[in-house]
Length: 330
Image 1 (cartoon, rainbow, N blue to C red):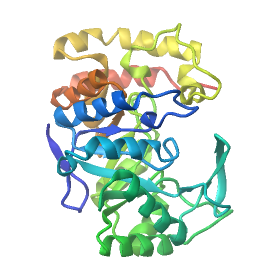
Image 2: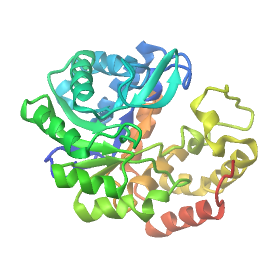
Image 3: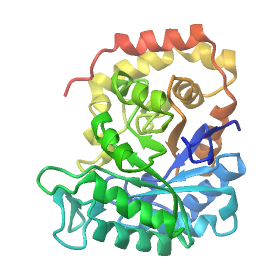
Image 4: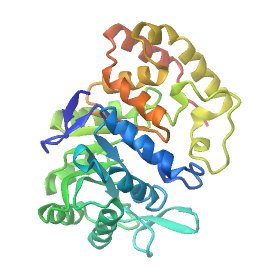
């Protein structure tokens, strides 16, 4: 699979990466089969994917533990990315959400970052993290100067515990502050053909400055695969329940749009998921699409998108159809 540089780091990542939020399980994603998740990770790497993205907050460490077990015999084939900034050990930071009896807070305090990094290294079973990203940014209720956050991350880099620094869910103004205090090589924003809001600011900002973008939810949590029909139901705590596109009236419109793209799948000999991923990674400024998978066959399918190349006319047609859907409403 073709690779692209992770900003100025010199690290090369594949156009399709593996996102492991769902592997963490919990109320948002339901029960997971760890053995199946490990097989999915192996399938992704064997299919050519080299970037695996995880975070402590994915199942309160569970995703990192599963990823760690999966990559022990193939660590040198993996660019390992995780995050810091969501904290639940004490009352440091501002409250973000509550789940499974834990209060999760946003904290980019140097003290909590260092504790998080050490815990991630243990769970992942590795001596270095290739890309450490700030998961969510500090809030005015519990502000930590970005300069202080960066100073801590750069010390960790100097110690060899992390190789490169990135951000997630950050605005251009926040990235300005990061760049004033040090070097960031990537940004991880939400992006899909249905949610293109970052095209107005984050994507051109990163493209101009040579910052890689690792976009998450490119398949809108499976909706854009075409495999989630109108009869599929989700619990009140499920992650998909919180996305307006999954509401029946909105879902119907998305599925109708996907049905009109079947000729494109036939022309490019690809699945719907591969078609959508290929569109995503071809957009200006997008470095890599992080695609979740809990089954080996899904991981292999997503990886196959790396060899699908769409022409300009096909991509323009898909964009027009998505734009015609408008906003999903609430």
